[in-house]
Image 1 (cartoon, rainbow, N blue to C red):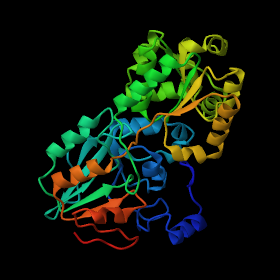
Image 2 (cartoon, rainbow, N blue to C red; image 1 turned 90 degrees about the horizontal axis):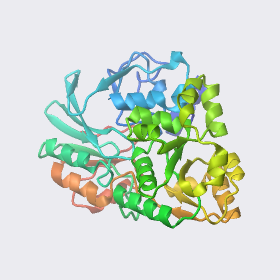
Image 3 (cartoon, rainbow, N blue to C red; image 1 turned 60 degrees about the vertical axis):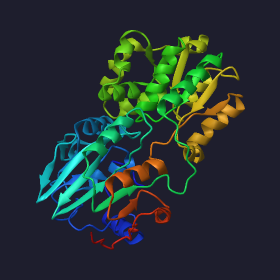
Image 4 (tube, rainbow, N blue to C red; image 1 turned 180 degrees about the vertical axis):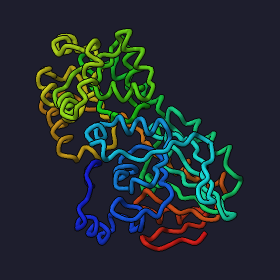
Amino acid sequence: MPKFEEKPAKEQWQSWFEEGLLPELQGLYAWEEPEFKAVFISHTHVDHVGLASWVHPDIPIRMSRLSRDLLVGRLEELRKSKESALNVQCFSDAKPVEIGGIKITPYRVDHSALDAHAFLIQGEGKNILYTGDFRGHGRNAQWTEVMLTKLPSSVDAVIMEGTNLGRTVVSVEEEQIEAAVCNQCEKTKGLVMGLVSTQHFDRILSFFHAALNTGRTLVIDPYQAHMLDIAGSETKEAMKQGRVKVLYSYRTSKALADSGHKKILYRYKNYKLAKADLKQNPHKYVLLVRSSMLQELEELELDDSSCLVYSMWRGYKEQPEMAKLLGFCEKKRVPVVDKHTSGHADIDTLLKVIKHCNPGMVIPVHTDCEAEFCQYDVKTVLPLRGKPISI
């Protein structure tokens, strides 16, 4: 997958069409005459918005206001030039948007990305629900429940995410993850490190609450502090109270400086934690780490009195930089414990939505196991690239 800010050469995107990496939607891309009236984005995970800069600039990209702010605040976006700014128009939760005779109503749902939305699409006498990525066991599970109360009693089709189809998944509520991290903090004599996605605000709050409840201080980097401020997190006030500190890791600080955003570095200078303090008093802190922080971790002289709480999808462990971090922990005899729950709906939650919507058909997306839906008592239409589906 190309980087967020890259624009493809003509030969490149032609080959991607041929290989099936890009949908052949004439009039969508920046190198064509625009033929679309809008593009709707459900949330800011890169697999949903990573190529948005390739959409023709005359085509509005619709997303929630918070999603826009989070997207603009991302390090990938901070590195981009002004010329590649997106043409964003914001929608509001449960407020319909009418475009070309089609009414699209966004509904906020629970997901590991903050402010994710599903879309109810209505036109020509048809009702279609696109679920986006969602779940029912996160810190904001009530959002998914509220959406269900606002939907029609039946729809013609549900375009449904199926990330966990074909997987053995036990959904653990976010509060249980928080309790598990809290327990880990209590029994760890040294430094507790957490490996968490910067965009997973639910999980960062779990580590923050665990730190508070065990008398520790959460330590984050300037970029994480910046994103938490955009999200309106409770950590902002806690920082003023000294319960959250900022560690200026080399690679993250350099990336911010090189992208012309030294102001973010200066913004949190009053909350800076000295590396010497972290080294001398590891038992006082919960440190959110990145796989790029090996230099800082080497300086801390860690041993088996500390631990790393791995709180991400296990597939990331196979990435080279992550493997180096885990190898470092093994070398230093730092225990690695897994505390994670999926950001996506389990089978029971998928079936609950299907039962509520009583759809004429289910069209599975966002999965490699589309056929898994066929075992349930619902008409399943498997999408085929380039083939239209009549509803």
